[in-house]
Length: 339
Image (cartoon, rainbow, N blue to C red; front, side, top):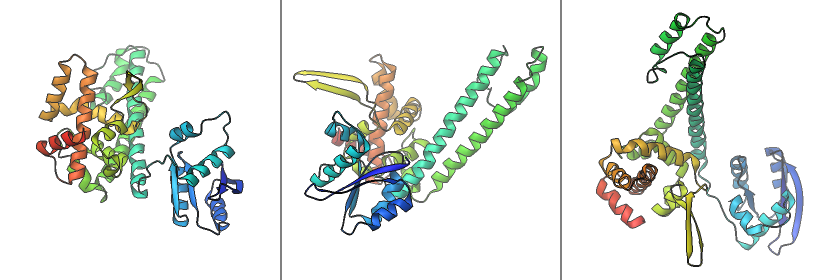
């Protein structure tokens, strides 16, 4: 984002100023110096919102971050451009009708950025592992799927390739060794980031409490703490389940109601971690195992996994709200109260 459109309106709706300025700190600072009366700012949620929000907040009476999807529903029209958007956001603030986004504290957002980068490294590492398997299959080289990515076995496999096929493609050995080096680097980096997050003083107590739930490990507990932020803002377990993308989209008109697939309006980072955890958690948690087996008896494995993920959300909220280690009875009471 190289520039931003700005519209300043009085409480009466009169446009006091309109301009397009560069999206950098010096330009914003110069613009704020021209404001001689208290003001409230509103900006659309984008990937650049965080630093602008932090930069404006000490100087304004209030800074509001607008949800683009809800704003579009309110202001839909034939024309759309940055100048009109700025005017419409000014009107939302003026009449007190702002579809506001939650902004986590700066420290939480900084740690969340670290966790998401760690997840990026994990995905990249998985792709590199799949690429190694692909190169071996392309050349017709048999290998042990379970052991392939163990450093010792992989080294022995690469050394044995010249004895297995003749001639050996000149690119194969170099690419396999380079691939292994990259995987090792990614694994070390992601583990280093994960260890740093676990030791952070702001998160330690909260993460340790979450891990008292059987089947909840460091990645899920960190994802919950950083993606949710302040757990009180979710209000209820139903809202938390919706936030995590574990419920279906609903469309109702008159006496007809339609439930579609899992909603796309969710926190995708938390959703993916919860789904992966729900596949393994029943092995370590008797309560979650019961949930899984009950749903599986109805004949749908994916629905059973979703049910376990929802129960994990209920348990995580119960632990977070109480500030105490996990107890099955406490979690059951929280589920009854929240659902």
